[in-house]
Image 1: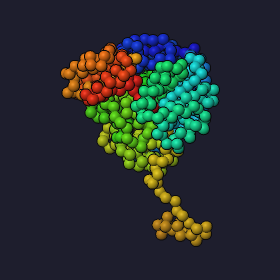
Image 2: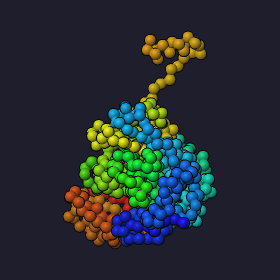
Image 3: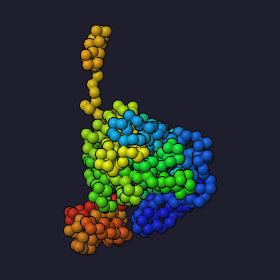
Image 4: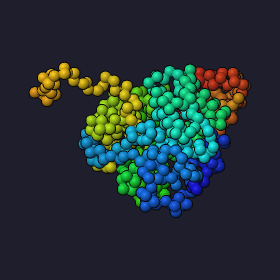
Amino acid sequence: MGHVKGLKCRECGREYAVDPIYVCEFCFGPLEVAYDYASIAASISREKIVQRPENLWRYRELLPIDGEPQVGLNSGYTPLIKADNLAKAIGIDELYIKDDTVVHPTLSFKDRVVAVALTKAKEFNFDTVACASTGNLAHSVSAHGARAGFNRFIFIPATLEASKIVASLVYEPNLIAVDGNYDEVNRLCSEVANKYRWAFVNINIRPFYAEGSKTIGFEIAEQLGWQAPDNIVVPCASGSLLTKVWKALKEFKEIGILKELNTKIYGSQATGCNPISAAVKAGTDVIRPVKPNTIAKSLAIGNPADGFYASQVIRETGGHAEDVSDQEIIDAIKLLAKTEGIFAETAGGVTLAATRKLIESGRIKREGRTVICITGNGLKTQEALQGHTTMPHHIKPSLSSFEEVLEKINGN
Amino acid sequence: MKTRVKLTFPQNLIKEPVIFTMAKQFNVMPNIRRARITETVGEMVLELEGEDAALDKGIAFLKEKGIEVEMVVGDVIE
């Protein structure tokens, strides 16, 4: 038995029944899941949570399902790593990495949202799931959907490089390569979602799908010993993840699992696609759409659906936002790898590079406890590092050739 | 056909009756659902109804005027 009261418009507050709908019929505002927090508070506790399996469903009362979890039973509960080497390198006292480079099964935080979306799709009796994606979301819908027995339709712009789609194609979804630009693909997908009775995870299932992101926030609090950190830095594409990390902490406070909550939420973007950080830095909540041009493809959303709400959260919590160049992204990926042994995708580089800037500008205090969200695995975006890594030492198959190189390495 | 769009007006167009002009010129019926004006821009969320060709022409007219026209739901390619 779930604890969802219904769906509610974020703009006008109008309430709707639980259905695969996503936009208010009156003001066209986005719909969000509303919960009965009194009944949740009565049925969940720290003790109950810790006895459950280590996956994202350990917080199931705060997720929008009615029955048993059906998808993603091994997803979530990723490590929260105390990053002392990196903390020293960037001049901060206490730093943690929420490491979603290792989410099961496709190595990005999208496995969390898709787990919730597809469980809900089962509850709604859909037999087909779909998404529009150039990367992580496509991988996750393809993989989770395969195991769960859904027909799957993945839409991509036809210009996308072949190497980007292998990690989806291996699961044998129906991959539809649309001969058009991003705007045309966006528009087509909305039309398809409105016409066919499919679970389009980030369109008509979006209110449920987005809730899966809260599990990052829940896990951070639990893994810090049921405490919220001083600062959390979150990468922003649509802005949804940032709003949900904050929603998670507020919900934990609301139901008494957290005693105190003074966390500041910070956003990070690439300068080549910075509609949210530009608005925050300009002190406005008007999000001006941009045409993305950055190596951080997984954050390249020029017209972010939740940009306005993300900027509101940043303001409400006293956080800030920063954006970084492609070179800063690459440098940060390398820094994270050589200090903490974690290979993040470009979005991870964005988050770390932005964190450095926020520390240097004094927006993040050096003495606080800071968590950065690393949301995807670097093995997926290796091409971004082409020509930017150290080179191998070539030797002949002889001990003398090896020792010649060894001398150079040791600086003799 | 109906379409839902979000318009962002630059400051110099806030005082112009652009929506009315589009409606009249291209026979497109606007139904405004939400709007706000800040110090620097105007934002409007509305539904446009008309023949397919008329909608395309009307939206092209708005863009030519310098108005940003986006889908209400934001980008869906993630």
